[in-house]
Amino acid sequence: MIAFRSKRFVYRLIFFTVLLLPVAATVAADEEAAITVFLNVNVVTMSDEHIISGQTVIVEAGLIAQLGPVDSTPVPEASVIVDGTDRFLLPGLAEMHGHIPPASSPELGRVMTLLAANGVTTVRGMLGHPSHLDLRRDLLEGRVFGPRLVTSGLSLNGSSVSGAADGARQVEAQHAAGYDFLKIHPGLDAGEFTAIAAAARRLGMPFAGHVPAAVGLEMALAEGIATIDHLDGYLAAMMPANSDASGGYGGFFDVLLVDQVQESKIASLVAQTITAGTWNVPTQALFVHRLSSVGTQELGRRPEMQYMPAATVQQWANTRQQQENERGFSPALGDRAISLRRKLIRALHTAGAGLLLGSDAPQVFNVPGFSLHDELQYLVDAGLSPFEALSTGTSAVARFLGSNTGVVAVGRDADLLLLDANPLEDIANTRRIYGVMLRGRWYRAQDLHDRLQRYRASD
Image 1 (cartoon, rainbow, N blue to C red):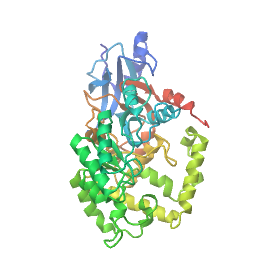
Image 2: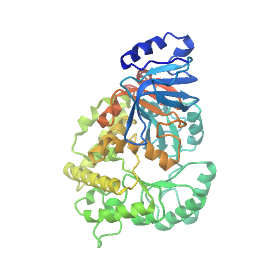
Image 3: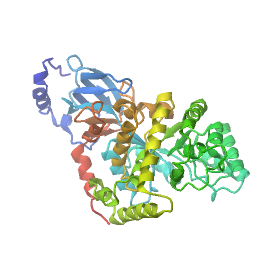
Image 4: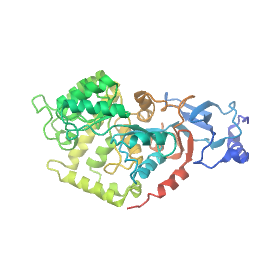
């Protein structure tokens, strides 16, 4: 073991001295290493808001094996040393509403690389495919590069389900296949939805996603939906009592109803959400990038667009144009809808309803990974502190999933993110990535950048 002295000014000198150890201690990043050491790092544990400075974090066999003061924590000689001086180590982020291509798709590598390069170490795939079952294992075991995958089954919607009995049968089939979640899409009638919910409860399988118009928010909550994504159904539920139960035609997630809703209903809906134990995945980035008065050309010039096919970016621009041309819509109305959603997010959070980080990517000007950092900023814009926003993508996800990630502590899975600046001071610092650890394997930012270049400006 190597003992380190306590004077802060010598740590960088010691770091370079360690690099003179035998070759086994300095294997290239992106290669398997038995032990990785983050030396003299500031640890953002995410178990609370306190930062522990001057720490040594030792990772072995995919787990955090030791965490202690740099002065007194010996470092194994055959280690990869990562200099943590003036850097901040925190759990990797979770994208709780991602669209993952099938395993055979040429786009899979692009999406997974974009996620990992942005510090995403877990993704909940909300556009299910049978190939995701094997992909989940291949990612976990390192045969495919990318975050760990939480799978949803094929969409249960008005086109895929034909009656209550068929809905229950599909739940049983997806449970037997081994999916983690059921994905609910629009179009289900109330009978189909309640049959699906009953079968899911009987099997202990969570169902999540949209709130079908014929079901409505209150029934979805009462039936035990695990997550509501996009805040779906809340605006329709805020309509005056004499309105159509579904809110009538509201356009994209009911945004056209924004000038008719009664904000006084928010408190009651939040209380029902808490009683139900339902979590929300707001995907605010989806709404800002599709509805706001920020121009389409400006969004198309964002640096991350270079990593998406030109045809995809053009399709996103066309979708924005269609939105702007929809009868009754205006950018000003879109901004009002975004502002109302901020109030709803803040009310849910303040009351203690669970929020989970998710951006819905790839979607309209939502580039995977990059859009999750946008989502963090939009949560802060809604009134959350940087720590509270980060919690929605780390410790809260661990509680929701019952996973071993989400907190930096001994015995936890080593899905980690190392930043060059303190994210609790400014949430924008989550973009200042020095490196990412996926299940105990360390990747420097440059390694990840090099991987991204194969997707740059491709058609």
